[in-house]
Length: 550
Image (cartoon, rainbow, N blue to C red):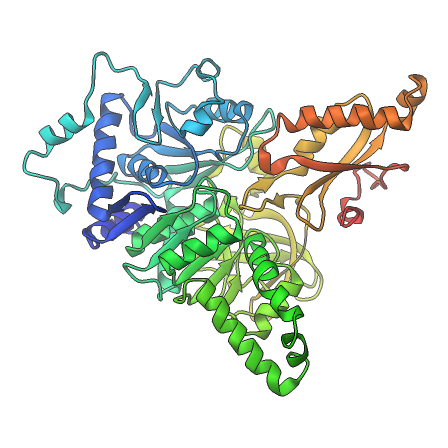
């Protein structure tokens, strides 16, 4: 099949049959043959459950081998995968499952404890990700998947038995929800052409990743960035994935690097920044290093040694670290450039599945986010695109089909000529390197790659009778801080003192945090004496307050 994503997956499996494919760190390892067998077993289960081609199957759980098996089984069967971040609260998971019209839910045991089956009435079946046991089904009588598997493949399971759906470019492959807090969640429809184009680009432009290479999966698999370049790329390349299911602290991540010895690392800025700040910068401040780096002749020797040690910390085999999801801290970027560390910064968004731009580290230009990737066009909506920042518009094979059941949102995002309005501001130089100058969107990237939308948290705050208006920003420790301008008239009318207001807000924020995912909780708040400055449309000028909590 021409331009078939699933054919890339099948080739990755059959060409690396006996190599290790998936490992839960310190737990079980699946070879590519075992991966294919587990996919075939789930196909038989889907058939028994009455799943039809095009039906939606939701997955909500921490990173794991079984999560990966679940999504590959879903896609190769011909169903569409609804990916849900396991950190979402119960209300959000219920809402997304219902909005997506999913028939089956694969759910991790930790997530399942906080869900209510009665809130997802349209689900036909619920399967525990941990061991693929059936929690609910519409099967009459018992169904033993191993018995069904042995019956279908009495002579054993071979490469010739690997089945993949005959995909069409515009078929829906993944329905990705970046947030579920609002009453009208947005489901980004990623078609197979986008999966193929993203994966094909990675295969063609990251040739140093070879079959058998280690890979560390630490970004949320429910987000397109981690899914596309840690999971999908790894399988098509025949690599060996190691899954981190816990919150990826520097210590856990470095331990995984030592085990997997990856050639490619996919990361978000905060992960890299934490490693540099906790492991490298303290060394630079100590004597005699702090003195040596001030001497030009010796500085290069020190930097070369630090570079070598940093590469060793990444497992020793690292060829490139790709950073995406948000802007890299300038101080960290400058340092990595000085020591000639092999890093690059890419640019993308869920709606592009996710790639927009990238460049190999040796030709990457510092502070840029690379050049447009294959099969994608980029233009800057500005009278002088090389000097005056304008909104970044993109068009091409990677772009989504639209937002699920939301034609109005789709029409406002993609114009009649196919240009997707990213909401990001930037310039593009004469060599097509893109430089992001700002974000008209306000999304904050969580420490583990989660998307945090401050407006959603602000909606909760603004519903309080004590709050007139609010902004949620990040402080210097990457914690969320609420800037609150109280309703002075209400406080005066009800004779509420400053001390009483603090007590009331403490209680209010505690209740709000109970409705939010752990990564999007308010760590503290600041009460303002003056209201926020507004635009003529009465929108708060956010950019004026981004550093107020730092």
